[in-house]
Amino acid sequence: MTELNLLEPASEWRAEDVADESQWIECFDESECDEIDAALRKALEKSSDVMQVSRDDFPLPTLVKRVRSFEEGLINGRGFVLLRGIDRARYSREEIEMIYWGIGMHLGAPWPQNQYGHVLGDVTDQGIDPADPTSRGNEIGKIAFPYHSDGSDLVGLLCLQTAKSGGASTVANAVSIHNDLVREEPELAAALYEKQPYDFRGAEPEGAKPWYEMPVFTEWNGRLFVRYIRPYILASQRHADAPRIGEVAERAMQRVDEMTQDRSYNVFMDMEPGDMQFINNYHVLHAREAYEDDREAGLVRHLKRLWLATETLKERPPYFQRNLSSHWEDARSVSRIEIN
Image (cartoon, rainbow, N blue to C red):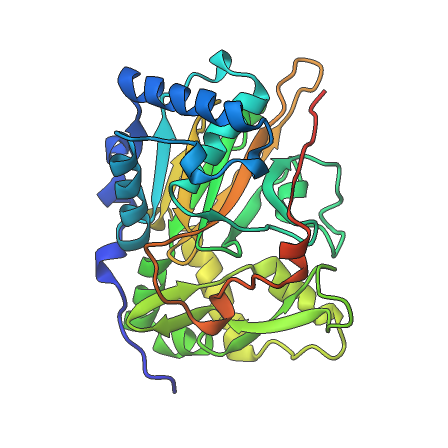
């Protein structure tokens, strides 16, 4: 059996440890909002296209130190933060997206999120059938979405608009889940260190197999790296040549699913328009609750998403390395879905 270690205990937490929202909601004060506004004006002098704007084009001379502290907490601390205080009503959609892009670039380099190369993506109901084996979580609306991780160091969400009801964003501590499995059910933990099959969901490179393999848990230089997307693992089984999910691995994943539903591992947050959430994909799983839109009233849940490569994290396992020559990188673009 794989030698198992308790990893990164400083990043473990239980719900009771973070019950005080002031620990993880970081509010910008008036002077900081003014600095952000000035950075926006500076960026717009160069271009209204976020892809033409670099980190240097969005200067935060005073605030940058605080933003960098957020990055440190994401990588070596609790692994999630909610930024609040920017007045959504003050800005057009293009302006608030530029602010999000600018702050995001001070946390990391934008990373394409799909085969379309979207570096600034949309998360909203796009009318996609959840049963479609090529569907992706950001396209599916209304239903609850299970705890999972994305394909980058950090993932950010900007709330443009809330739903009529529901849609709370939730996170679960994958470090605590890993370490508790190691302590209490090591056989199951060991199974998740073995490679598991994942469905590419139609996003594979041309000529490649429609599935790939990687572990749920990886230890690398004393750090824990987690990649867990249960629907993609299950969908891989539609391919006859994909490896079958082992019995112990299946029990282990069922146990992880149970643990993510245990409120002691969770934090629930209702994002308001203008809020920005950032999480460490390797330490924190994220999900959302079911929701109801009202398009006639303009109450449609709509978020923008960033995937970021952080500079704080110096080393990664080979399969977590960003591939700068991938077909996703070659198609870099911005998603723009208009909500009527």
